[in-house]
Image 1: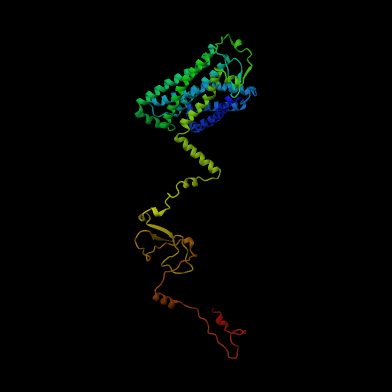
Image 2: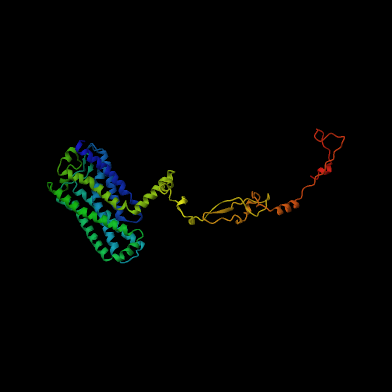
Length: 445
């Protein structure tokens, strides 16, 4: 491709993929809330961006008809998506009006299911009908534009205005009617509005306001854009419709347009650029309303935590790094009354006798005051010995008075040893000769 259109097409290709990713982010929690209008909006705009991204990559610098079946499908899909975005906006506005004007707070499951079916019919039936009627105005299979890909095409006939081009304007006006009625009901019943919102556990007050903002922007853009498309197509020469045989003549042909042709065409270039950016703008606007909200940030944090756990990473260091020095470990910043005592382990038990049968207890502790009072070391807390730890004590007794020492010394009973007898004729005891003693006395040891 030449220089003038290389950069714009490359930028559009990147934004097509970004739009698909961003508009798909809020899909999960809108499915949880049974929000049919938003799900349809994500469905049409997301698939439109994805198809456009693929087409712009494949036909970035060529107009070769690589996969005709793919072009047959995607060209009609884009044809339906242009109407699907409008019907999704209509579903959102109609649902907001029903919520604002409802007089019954509690809604049964059967009513919710019936409302969901009605919303699906409004959002899906018109695009399907439009695609079915497309056969009556279709001139040939499709066109291929370099840098853009496959695109549906039909001649500018009177019938094409009624079967396709006027649909966005009509749907946009109906949605505008519901939007105005919603604003009027919101102003009149603003006192009861929070109670009505609270009856729906999946719809919050702020989400309702975001839906109103999205629907209003869609109305302000849909109707003017539809009028501009009709006016721009009216500048072309009107083709007189003489019947299907005349319109479908040479139906299998595929027209191919290099970039230098459609970029320099004053009528074709605005249409192609508008078709490139309409889905992207819809996706970015939707993400701006719902992808940056508080509930979305909660989902982002939960997803980030899940991914870090799966990768074996810990988010504790990230959260503690920013709060280091503020977690309470710096005791110098606290008054002494705020830290009256700190308990540390101790292995001293006063008043316990020293015996090999005593046990070691892990419940021992002593208190160190941090205030200005003088600690009294003669007051200690006695702890009960744990029964499962008997037989392994290292307790040290408290110091005893001299009288207690003497009384304990007198009460001690030492074993009796026989006095050794020496014979003058025998060698001294330090020699190698054995010392003779009474065997009966040795048995007493």
